Image (cartoon, rainbow, N blue to C red; front, side, top):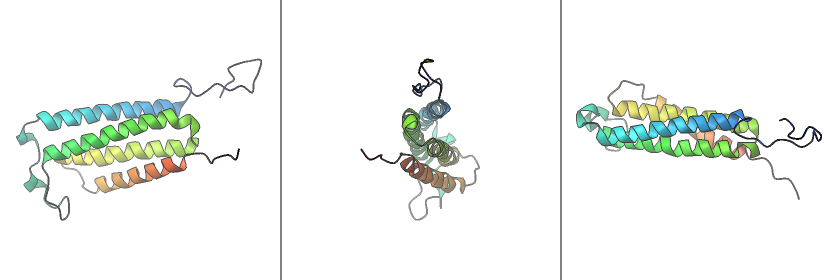
Length: 159
């Protein structure tokens, strides 16, 4: 960081949107993800049934549970995007107080995991061929991202 006062080089400028790439990246990813989430919700609400997967096409996808339709899957995908969009924006806002490397790793893991998990579910809902194994990989990245976020907090200093 650069000094905000040239006469006093120990005074450091606080992290702001202009000088912290982690903040910018988190907000940018969160904004894109939020937009995708809204678009998925709109698609789930307005696309005709013929454009969406029917339960018979999705058998076996949810193990022992009855299969769901494409509209429900788009809603779930949208919700996951919107929740993680907010989480990425919050991570960006909190990043100056977090361990930098762990915060970056958490952000990358959360963004990639959401894209893989939510993207796989949405594409299957839209009857597009996509390897179903990408969803569990995305889920594992999401779990890892939340764990890294927990570890990103600096140790408490004794008072």
